[in-house]
Image (tube, rainbow, N blue to C red):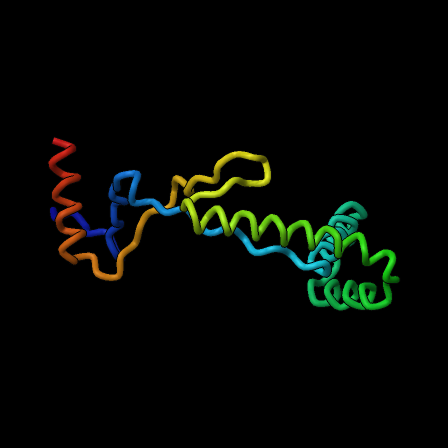
Length: 138
């Protein structure tokens, strides 16, 4: 009796690429003062176990932000300024050296699970790379 062929597309095996193929992702942009406020509001909602629809939450939080005094907004504005300085520092390091230091003071490396994707899998470079990988495995 014939074996049944699996349905759907066959799974592609992730090819192992040399480490230098990976690229460090650029630093994340700085958050705004409103974003810091929304993050804090979200934590307060989670602590109180209050279930709120996302749209209602955003509407309520932006209304609170609009009515917040400038003295209270200053806290979030300072956080946003500090985050903007971090972004500028990391961007400068990224542009000069290709890597940058994270908030914890350690170098940021590319994620290990990231595989390089090309627009044309049969390009000359990819064919050469695949041949090199196969020869290295043997």
